[in-house]
Length: 514
Image 1: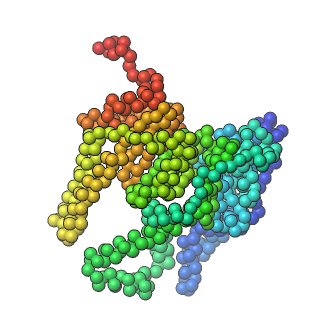
Image 2: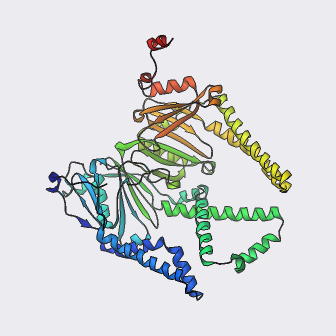
Image 3: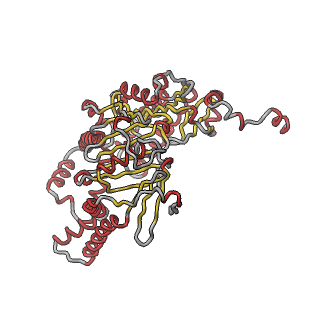
């Protein structure tokens, strides 16, 4: 958005500053990443004696990408005033993005490998719009020292203090709440983040093969592996491929865990903020204002739960969510022992009771719904496979492979039913559900700004309701699934007194309609 600077602000504003000149060594490389596949195709084509015009066009586009990287330095400037953060970009179309300092919710400082080589960092100032573009401002190419100073200036100082005034170092104290332990790496293989790595590598590899016209079957190792699998019985070949995938997933998940959470540290500052630092090759520093904290989430994926592990996520306004395992900037504790996660979550919100309180179960009707859905889904899949066997000539082993879906579905339904629960304390609304990922949400009752009650046709027949609390933080919607109707109304009335009554008709209104 383009904004005009008010005269009152001009008198106290700082001068416009540029990014570090060292970014000229980084941004051209970053631009070339987007053109990596055409450039690789060009290099392979030149190596094979192909001087086609398409390859030279790709080289020309690569040159333009490098030029754009240089142009970013000369067309980007910023300044920090007592009232706002402003970033000015553009050559032909000059735009000024202004973020008021009282709207700043988070400040992230990130440094990937190239940044760290040249002593640079990227600062992202978040304004509280979750997962939206133009969520704030990004300054990509500050020196590491300038980035740290800006980070401290925006969130560790009182808002009324001028930006240029220094503060004594001893004014802000820090308490470490959690720090990475080498023993926690054993939880890495149980995060399954390696599956994403497999998907990314497969996508990159297939595109590279298509661009370079390489026949994989002619490569010695691949050719021998394919022939070896062909010579084995089909069940044995499937088991070998599955074992290879499991091993690679475990190794990749462990590597991803180390890369993402190495030197993890969560600390609390006396200025009223939580500070998270993590990362090996790419370091990331995230600061969360505690006054924006609305609660915590205790997340227990199925495999991680099997080894009594869990992770903790923040429910706060201004944090990006839905970003895979890292969940944007909301992670407060990586996969670690569940006891550590529960204790940390209680420390962060200042109350351990919501994390350990006994939950109210949702009854037999909610359990029956889970078994009904599991059996219906499994039966439909088995019938589809049977149809392929009878009418499309598929082998019978495919049908017998699908039959175990019934007991597997029953086990998942049993686990999902056991996960259902909720409770209400004087200050906290607690909800738990999920099987593949069991989540326990702990939300402040004074952060609830509305209720949604959803009832499907099958829920109405069972007398169940899904009660959803709406809030400004995190995912903005936190549900209590398949709770009895009377209990849903009781929870809504008790958690936020008076909020539900204003939408219910009075006795006079009811008599008038009659």
